[in-house]
Amino acid sequence: MIASDTFEREEKLVASNRKARHDFSIVFTLEVGIALQGTEVKSLRQGKCSLVDAYAAFKNKDDNQFILYNCHINEYTHGNIQNHKPKRDRILLVNHNEIKKLRNLTQEKGMTIVPLRIYFSGPFAKVELGVAKPKKKYDKREAIKEREQKRETQRKYKM
Image (tube, rainbow, N blue to C red; front, top):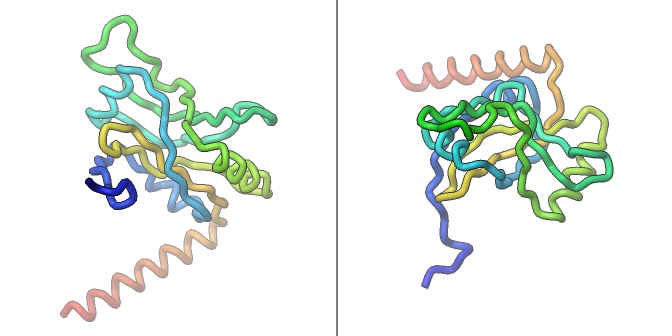
């Protein structure tokens, strides 16, 4: 029998938010579940999802319901009249202790929660969230410079 700690599910990436890593500096990452309708799951399995301009937040100030906003999941092509709305708000499944941690982190000035990627972990749809702080324009330029310098040094050592 395999212990649950050593067992790893196969991950299948559906969508990633590359722009988030460029625009924000990620402080903390967290894996959460997402509540989906049947046609949304089928559409995700086809890879029809976009995380551009998506973010996660609490529904109300006092409420513990955590929601993913502006995540676009295309309508299922073989769906019927009961197909889902592409940009509806989706509930995220988060542990109570993690909710407390996220609430404390987001109350700091300038912190926001952005989805970094959506993937299937075994049969379950998961979202990787990042608690992030926006980068300034000069920070982005420095990151680009560092990346270019790193590439140049790798090219020199490759030859």
